[in-house]
Length: 411
Image 1 (cartoon, helix red, strand yellow):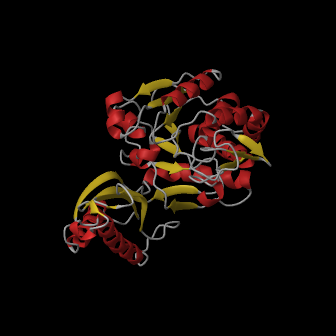
Image 2: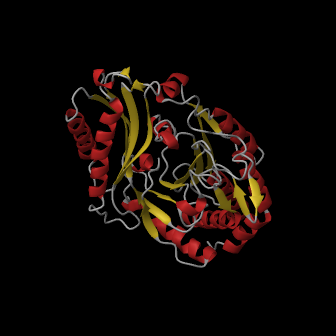
Image 3: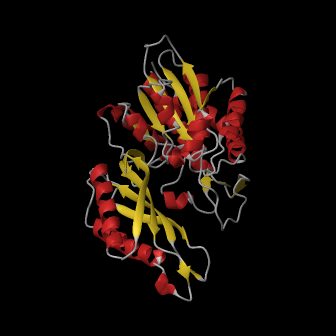
């Protein structure tokens, strides 16, 4: 079977304005996580997909599970597109997440305006990863219009829990047997195929002292001073991580970040309690159990060095690293082949220091890669920062690459 790749490209070019409007509609429905009230976005996405003749299955996660998890609502979507009898070919899943971190400060554009300026769309999730709701949907539409596959199937998985780790997003769909694809392509950037990523351990540490009036501070135990001592021990550990290197291209060394701290009751009160949250990125070669044990030991030893200080340590998230599965070769080869043709340059297969919910597919033996619409680096996209943006040429090209790759994989 001869595949006319230029016909796929032309269809995407002809429908590109429609693809841009689809993405704008998705960006304009907020999905800040926290608080994580994401069911309304799933409803809106399903409405928009229906305009293309796509029926989205709505899989609502039970409210009690969502609330216990720290979010408000989650409805995950699956669109199934079979092209032949069951078992006639591969089932390829395309996964993107709709939940995003809150916009924060410093924006010069409306974070939910989806404004287009100089060929770039601005807004939260334009790059990560509502962009791939659009690229994946329109790649499948082009595939069906021009390549007309006769075997295998494609599934669109649009989920809403990546920022919290994915257990109630893809993890929930997989756990309940709602999907079991043969291969996976997950939301990513246009200029690299990601085959591995870091793991992530997130913990909450509560440091207890004893409140006292600031006029008689000796009658209390300053929890903030205790927290500072613990933080200094953790930051010393972080310096040591620079000496540990990964063998995976694109991943350098482990690192630790303390991203949130709060405590105290008033300016004139010795703080009796301080809480902070840390994020420890683990390279693929590390053992998560050993990493967590070491972090706990550092915290407890530092606390013990300060009289009257005690600590509570709670794990918030443990996301394993993604390592390449042998079966991902067809994905890597198809995407690299067509990315070079469309972008005009080689696209490397690398690891990334990010962590994603793609690992949940890999843990169930489903080979996957990360590829989609976006720039060369996270920094360039302003992902998780003010003025997140997407170059619309990258959206167009990534859609073409994915459509071409799907046509090969289903041929």
